[in-house]
Figure 1 (spheres, rainbow, N blue to C red):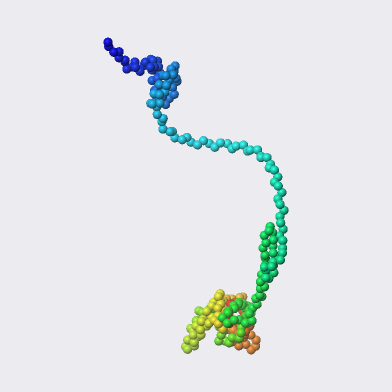
Figure 2 (cartoon, rainbow, N blue to C red):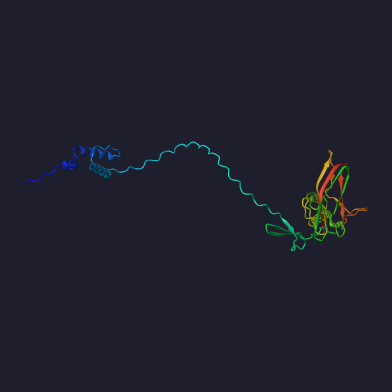
Length: 289
């Protein structure tokens, strides 16, 4: 007896039937391409077989690029005003500061108390009134300024005063005028002399610079010396101004005057070379005890 062989196509067709096989193939094709399929009139078993085959064959494609951001939405409508809250409870009354004695203050004071906390506020110690010294102490320096003006004068005279008196008067050897206020002019005057006066003049100038090592802007003086620095010499109202000698004469106050300075100040004198005219001189000084 011969065995009955089954045809390959028939083996596939038998579970589904001829129409079912066609629908299944179409569903399989559409499922593999990601498209949807319309279920025909398949039995429940046929549907399950088709879905099983579609799941095996179909694969998800790669994720697509993100789309652009959408436009901002319109502003929302303002909400209604909320209901007013209840009134809070009244606060407690503040406590005033109380003043009392301050037993810890030796110079007197007051004790402040508030909120259960206390603090003593004491008076400062009795201060001493500062007064000027009776005399300028050795090594201490005081400085000042001066100005003198003459409209029609050949000689200009003014005085300087020491706020703190010196312990003793100064003789002419301890007074220098324009020690380095006009060094070029002083050296020029010395160079105009002949020997031996020239050498003596330059030597005196060097000594003066050592005794008065300052300037008009920063006057200084060696201990026991008065130094006068002429800063500006102005000639006013004259087309041919006179020449003011750069070095002022420093004399004691009173009559007769002599070279030097009193304990309270000195007289300064300038001599002009030429006809009387408007002139002004200003400067500074320093004196060291």
